Structures are given as C-alpha cells and as structure tokens.
Image (cartoon, rainbow over all chains, first blue to last red; front, side, top):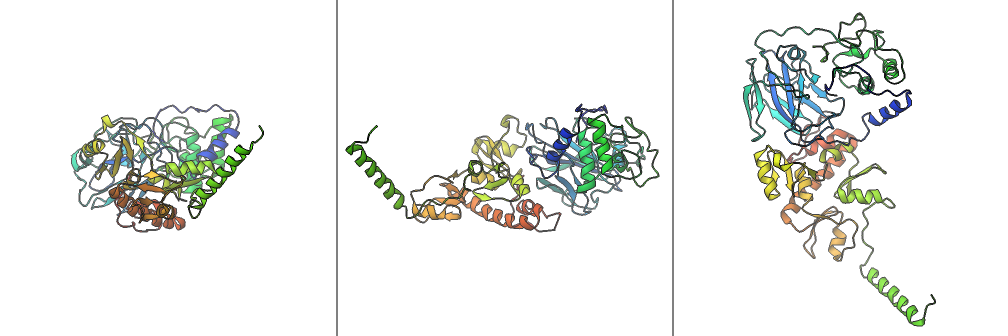
Length: 281
Length: 213
C-alpha cells in the first residue's frame, strides 16, 4: 500500500464486521490478482559506502494505468539473500510512476522523499550483486557498479535500457522526488510510529488489518512490529487484527497510543520492535 | 406439418449424408476442452482463466499454477504506443516485432509480455473447430508440423508462419517443463520459465531462457 494521504481516519464506515471479513477473505493472497504488474522496471540503485543508506527505485515507464498487481512480487538481492515482498497491490494510476524502497537511514536524510517501503541496511551488497524485480527485471551491479560516493546513483536510461550513473533522484509513488547527500554518517531514525498503521502508508484502513494478518500467517515482512500491537500488550496476535477491524468497522476501541499521530512507543518494554516507520520519519 | 413422402426421403438422405461426413473423418474430432464448461472453452481461446472452474489455459495446455499463468499473462495488452519511451519498442511497434531489450513483443499495437505469448499470437487458436486434414487432427494438442499439409501446431494453435512456429514450439516445451516444476514448487514454474533462480527451492532456469516480463 502506497502513501496516498496523511489522515488517519477510517475510510469504510460500515457498521458490521461481516462485510470487511468477507472482503478480507477475498483479498488475502491466494485470491485472484486482476491487475498486472509486468511493466515495472528497476530504475535507480543507490548506496553509501557502508550500505546503511540505500534505496532502490522502480519505475513504470509506460502510460499503462493499471500495473497495480504488486502483491506478492519481490525485490531481492542474490548476494545477501535479502528479499522485500510487496504486501499489497497498489492503488491509483501507475502511468510513469515510481516506487521507492529505502533503508531507515535513507528515509531520515534531509532531501529524501518519503519512502514507500523500508528495507534493511545492506539490503544489497556494495561489492557486486544481482538485484532482481520478480521475473520482470534485474541488474548486475558487478557489471554496472553502484557508485559509493554518497551522491551518485546507478540509473537506467529507459529509452535505451542502458545503465549509467548520475546524481541520485529518488522518487516515490506519490511523485515526490528529492536528492540526498549520504557522504556523512546517517542520522538516527526517530523511532516514532503510529499504532495501527501497520503498512506505514500514513493512513489506517482495512489494508493495515490485511497486512497484520499477512505478518501473522504468511510471514510478510513488517518493519515496525510495534505498529501491529494494537492493544499495546507487548505482543502481536490475532486479537490485534480483530481489534483493528472492530475499530474500523463497528465502532470498537481505538488503537492504543501513539495514535492517531506519530509518537514513541510507551510500551516499548514488550517483545515488539520498531526499526523504522515510514509514516514517521 | 405432416411429412410428405418427399420430405421424409429428404430427411433420410440428409441423415445418411451427415453420417457419412462424420464417419469419413475416421474418428470424431479430438476434443481438448473440458466437458460442459463454456467458460473453459472461452478461456482456451483466450489463453486465459475460467473463473468458474478456476482452471487456466495457454495454447490449450492446462496451467495449474496461477503464478505461472499470471506471469505469462499470454494475451495482448493495450498500451498508448505514442508514449512509449523505449526506442527499440517504438521500432518494434511498427513491424510487429519483439523488443529484446524489454523482452516484450508487439502485434497490431498490442503488447505481449514474453516471446512465447508474442509468437503464439502469430497463430490461430483452433481448439474446437473440425479439421479437414487428418494429420492436423492427430497433431492438434501437441507440438509439431503436420506431415500432410505443413501446418504448424503448438497445442491448439495452428501456424502458417514457420518462424513464429519454431519459437512457439521451443517455448511450449519450456512451458511444459515449467508446469511440471510448479507442481512441486509453485514459484518455480514462473521463475524457471523466465530465467530466474527460484527463491523458494533454488531451482535453476529452464534453458534456453529468453526471459520475459
């Protein structure tokens, strides 16, 4: 789920749980994906010298509106074995859009646009790697090395398909673009989060409940586990997803603070952790 | 309306003629579609999915893996060709060609996500219709060239274009291998077909992997 709005208001004022639960059953992986995603390319790859500040930008270089079917597709590094799997399909119009994956250190840099998804430090190897986007695209960074000067990035020319280097220009799905200088040490992540915004897109919707269920039952990666701990019990279980659905659709209890605004986790003594929360850079 | 002797004779003659026509084929046309499901018959024509039966088809072959079927997405897609950025794609649009850089093919300004899909659409799906040629009747559903009339077959797709037929045959055999792999490891079907190491079981690509989207 991409960052589309900053408000944290429920968007589906349905009074019973029946409809959302039915929708959930239809939306969970295993259901049929109607939208395609074949036209996404790897577009820009950036790293500082120690790999703590990295981003990978995908780009959809055609006028196709509906390359939305990213649920379950992955970006991975063959050298490190790290893999990011998209937790949900996209929404909106995908013509000439980008998706930005970045480390927490990158997300915290001045000039960085909000990342769409957090990836771990050293997601890919700075010493040469192959980065793959599902079966759609790949880049061998042994043949095309990623510059490590903190300002340049490896970039694809979509007219010719040739990889080259240039000033970094990370762009996110909302179309925000920026430029970072990662020559110095990365500033620490704020550690703040919004409970309930499990997919860190800046809004709390049914997609967050789906992401929570994906984390619980399908091993989907979540950067801020504390955001899933709706009742601040110090652990994440099905009760958290049910409470979130209840809040969204039947007037149930709201998630415990920090909610609905960003803030530190007062129950941080529990077993949950929050490496980074993209909605609270 | 009472049947006159003349009408009765015509009906009998017609029945005899029909029986003769059916009988001279040697056997009834090979049926490749599942019985009693119009959705599947339509899905076979489109290399698509029958939602009613949750069965998927490409070139008349059933593809059990939704992941593999979706990755192939073997039908044409509409894209605004006036706004194509890739220079090679822009050239290929003009000649219904295949862009090796993007691994996408073009026919009639429709976009195909793999060389297999692109090659398949140079042929004609003939899954249901009766075939006059006995050789074609025997070959339909398999991959090869009819020794009697020279028509190329890849599953239920008939080809006059020999170049496209060669590509489609090669990719069809790779598809069959991918289907087999997907039975024990679902992601393997798509990854091995498209030239990617399977992240689940490490299975290698099926050679020669041209790749696709």
